[in-house]
Length: 351
Image (cartoon, rainbow, N blue to C red; front, side, top):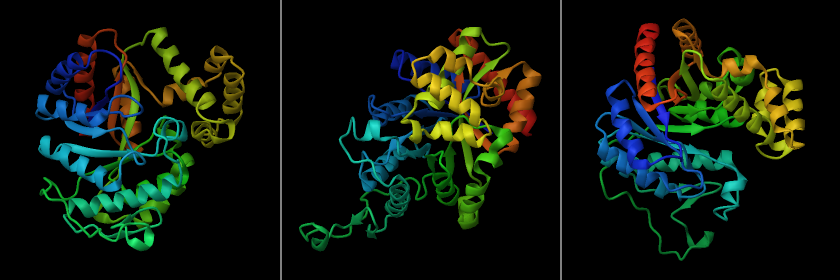
């Protein structure tokens, strides 16, 4: 079981990277870099690769619409090269607000496009001349499909460090999760309830695993999670409630909110409706207060050492193999110390 972190957009980047070196010495295994509509993640991951020795690196996530499949593969191979084989390609669809609103690209067929991007990436890394005829991508682009007719199959010039770079996909919907279970090395869910995994995702996971190539190995569930060893401050707990209310209540249109749908699959139909009604009416504080405490407890890693041990065991039993921590301690020194202690606890529990 690995411990990782996702770097947020706040604070000084150089100072954050210096602190990562301290985390690296104290049990952190992986760092993930988001790419919503901020600076690109690639330049920052390359900088981190140069400043660290052991930390694994992951994109969290590259949006499938913003690079061609071949460029996505080239970028992953380049980051794997400069990090000497430490990179995982994290992919996701994002949403129309970002894809159409910031990039001006049509948001369509996220499921089909994700499948084709994965297949093309794996061709590139194996140094095969890329030939792909799909529903969404044609490589080379022929004259019949609107090209000049001059394109020909090419293979990447460099020899990638690895011919099979791990791929992790952010997914929540049942069809997307089935695709992840079939094709990906890792899965990045959000608000993962270990006790209700099968209720929410049992069928799609089983569907995907039935088609999975055994060579892919176990699916690595990589979970973003708030973490605090000991009693967290009321302000930190309130921030968690606020985030849950935002996602369940206000993330997307009323009938297109994947997080609200997830809460319903967990069995919180009435609560999810109340949270959404309150949030969309502008009553955000009331929406946060309506988030069930049981849900707050289930999707976080908070408490004394005995409680943390129990929670780690529950997450591990549900298939979580990587924590992407959001440490809630007040100071950097406390955060590093708590990550070090969590690393020791994980080794005790998962030995």
